[in-house]
Image (tube, rainbow, N blue to C red):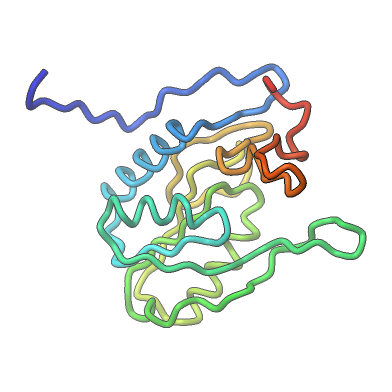
Length: 185
């Protein structure tokens, strides 16, 4: 088929194992970013894309590249308290002043409660954008819904960059201890 392309905006999804773990490959994650970029392009014309660091910068940068838009980041994290439990998200870097007066697309990798997105929205609104919309690669079913998302999932989602971590002792990548025992190891 020379010279003919078929655009599919729904990625082909793997079956979710009975334990409810949804493991994304890099290829599937790329397709989700592609589908999300197409959805955004159909309904919104952002001038700039902002990824929420840490993990939201990955789909944010991909979508910015696909839409040929400027890219910035804002850092928000759930820091651990003295008991080792993660608390509410906190802003660790201010929204870029270059967002003032512009149409902004705010991107994160996943949305559940919406706490991180709402905090990022407030921070971006402080610099006075002309308009702002939100997008995530995935949402948890029944949770907060951004303006755009590529896929709704249930259970535990394992992103390709999160599946393995560097073991400092051996210098090798090992299964992230958070995911040991989940899905097909």
